[in-house]
Length: 133
Image (cartoon, rainbow, N blue to C red; front, side, top):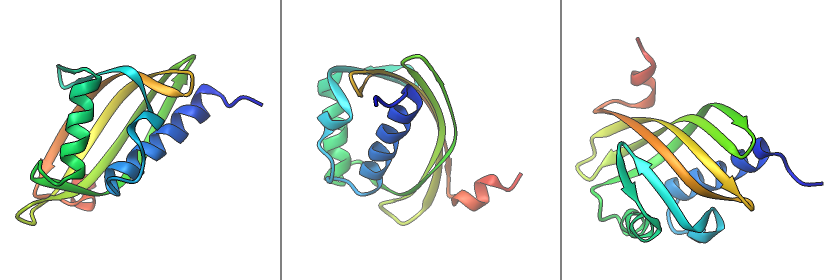
């Protein structure tokens, strides 16, 4: 039985977020199709730029590291998968941050082919502090 778009999207997202938190464990092409394009906060990353960015994250060259994630909600329609999630982490100097992310993914043949992502970083806050409003 073939999995639904919601199941596929959720499984890919879980794999992706586990990779972001525990870098270097999952080959990028397991989640992302060749030709993948990502719009992040208005900037286009083609597949090569995205792979370069992921490599920098894996090598710790971006000045921050993620240490946890929470999936807050998902919505699926056809091959589109929308998710709101948060990532927690620390900068190289130890300061914590929490990033809220809203992403629309497009799936094809069990992998992401496009995404449109918007981030909001709350610097100096843990996930618990970010939810206190």
